[in-house]
Image 1 (tube, rainbow, N blue to C red):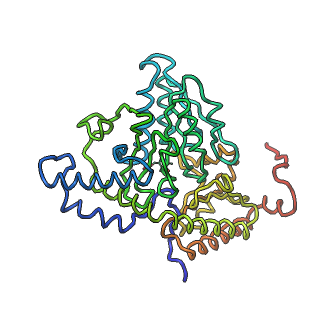
Image 2 (image 1 turned 120 degrees about the horizontal axis):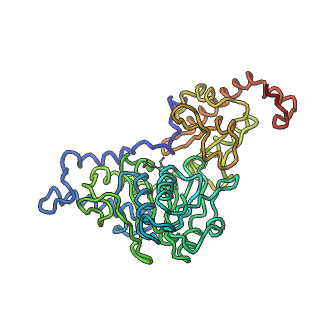
Image 3 (image 1 turned 30 degrees about the vertical axis):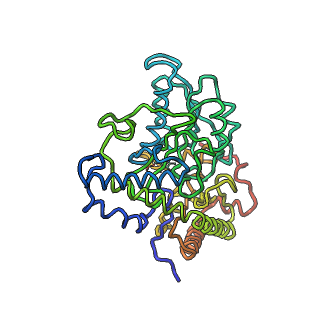
Amino acid sequence: MAAKTPIYMDNAATTRCDPRVVEAMLPYFTEMYGNSSSRNHAFGWKAEEAVDLAREQAAALIGANAKEIIWTSGATESNNLAIKGAAHMYAKAPEGQPNRGHIITAVHEHKAVLDPCKRLQREGFDVTFLEPKADGVITAEMVKAAMRPDTILVSIMWANNEIGTINEVPEIGRLCHEREVVFHTDATQWVGKMPTDVERDHIDLLSWSGHKIYGPKGVGALFVRRRKPRVRLEAILDGGGHERGMRSGTLNVTGIVGFGKACELCKAEMDRDGERLLRLRRRLETELAKRIEVTQVNGHADRRLPHICNISFGFVEGESLLMGIKDIACSSGSACTSASLEPSYVLKSLGVGDELAHSSLRLSLGRWTTDEEVEHAVEKITKAVLHLRTMSPLYDLHKEGIDISKIQWQTH
Ligand code: PMP
């Protein structure tokens, strides 16, 4: 059966909300619409009950206690609260003074980690941005080598959103606990797809988001460890003192109900989904490599999430490639800044050249991706790449056996 177009292969950007999640949310819009902080009537109690259940569901997915879950508006907010909140709480010196403390993160983290770290740098914290090797993995050895007596916080994502590579998070967690350094992980792409246990893996703070796990947008969670050690955060939002004073504001009850349901479904279906996605991704990668020469899968060959494939095609121009595969919804290796197309900073950090970065696609599969869709994507991409190469003089040279990288180009 032919795939229905357009086909969706951008699940790392966001996922379709599972209809079972929507169904769970609906009554909380029009029937049980109370404020979960209203303690003196049934509408409030019902809402609070629903929020408590969602807290249990979220905690169960990551091996935490329900009391350790703080609701937020998404992973961006969770990351900001974790990083700024911990830095301010554990600062070695007050604001305005030098040497406030040292933070370790990596250059290819999501902007929702990098930008809070850069702000802290301007406030007087010292930040080390680790650089990965070509496989994109951040190892515990790299973190260990960067540790200093004044290190107060390490923030390393569990899996990368552009290339899907998996960092050595349990090992980094153990190292941080040995050194009594707070450890935060942005697990937005990991949780719900892979088994997670914050106890076993020594995590102090963990961020994730509803819309990457087949839940609604605009709701997220932050795990904040309560014992061994008890981690404290300075709040960003001040107000009614919700969420143990860490995040004031009336709770997004419908969103939280959806988040909880999405967590429950992921926990129940993760193994089956994971196996299927890995099979589909392998099929996609092997078929593309078989039909198109000079392709390169970016990131570590095996230490990768099952559903993310980032692949570069030599001798094609990135924008033209995207035009040729318009009915496949996916992301490219170029980021649109205000006026120009910038090659992805994640790919650049692995040493991928600008040309190859521009001609990269991130194809991310999800719960509803089918074999037919994978076949369609392979056909379409192959056709587009081969067509563009018929117009590439460089590809002609390559076919003649000339090593393009050794050509001395003349500039006038
Ligand atoms: N971190 C990672 C790794 C992500 O992939 C994303 C979403 N692109 C975010 C953080 C931000 O999440 P949200 O959209 O929930 O703010």
